[in-house]
Length: 553
Image: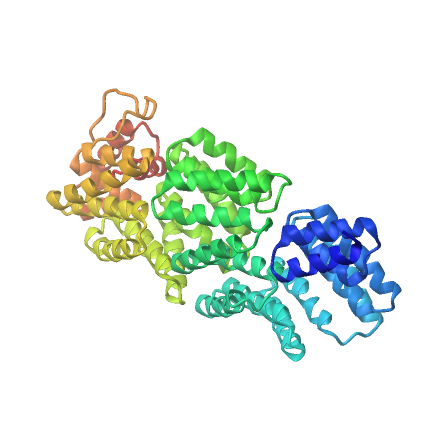
């Protein structure tokens, strides 16, 4: 077959979305003759979409030089932009930045008033967001959108809309940001955007929906991404990320076996060559190991996630809490929250921060996190964020010995998790409800809640949660001198000591506890001494952490 026939066939395969066939034909044609810049652009695109990164980079750079030789600076800028874009997408930041800088220089040197000028607003907006300048990023993406509409470019308009949506999320304007995400997805799902942009938008929107706890949107768009990938023969770059997103949904829906299988497939898919999303896959596997009590394996893959560029928090801090190291967990999650530069990043960390600081005997910090979660939920947060906020508030009220107040918010959280079909979180709320009922001496209701929670934990294989529930049912803490799960003598904390411990966990002074329980301060001190001895701790913070971690509060 001669070069002309190969090119004709390659162009037809490109138009049909048969990326591997198109790539093979363009590659064969390229061996027989030097391709023109327009065909090199098609070759570069198909090579990118089929995971042939080296061939893609070479074809785009040659197309750039070809347009430059022909005096078509707009074409040269376009190729420089897409080459830079592709390099950045796969993590080659220095090379990608260099090509984007070249594109910007050519635009200024030749005073080009073309759509490419608008495309260059996109990396500028991303840089602003990375610097924590969400307002500036919003302006950049709005400018890109304006240029796109002037030139009728749907790819750029969709990128501009996506960027504005993310900037608004980072500013805490959740409802506005999600509406723009939906608008961007309309362009993608109706086939108005190119494959490179479609895949990028799919993955970005799903990831952000997960980050703001919008499970319904994440599930809907994950299903759409799955269908889109299946309709793209030979497509490589987005399949691994699609598998991770599917694993996240399966985990939340209670199919942990299926989630592990999907995330392991994703790790294999993303490992050769290493893709920027590989860290996300490692982290997701770490979460599944942690929830199943496989703590050593969880730590190993959290470390792999960090090495691959994915922040291992809040998972690693929650792992430290599961190990009984509440202070180490609090230090880790505190550092991560301090480093979070925007509302989107903070939202991911706040639930774990509240749980960990409460366990570490810092109710004031936990209360501040609960207040911030409430604010985020009220500012257009999704049902899942509202459930997280109510669950956090309920745990805090329980620690403060306010079981009646806790019941209302915990029941609201339970309804939300049931609507979202999230069994693990439903079971965790039921345990909190059981604790509230026990504080109110409603033992029958507490037993009913525990029975349902135990069934869910057993079905999921959530061994740490099941162990805590077993201790709650036994009404006794484990001997702190023995390893977790080992048989041995258990030291019973009396009902009065539990009352004292709950008030200590709420940050109350000895004088306040004495007045509240109508006993003397000397008696409070004696109770505290007994509590410290039985729990094997030496101070109030450690007693609070131990009691919270072992379901005593």
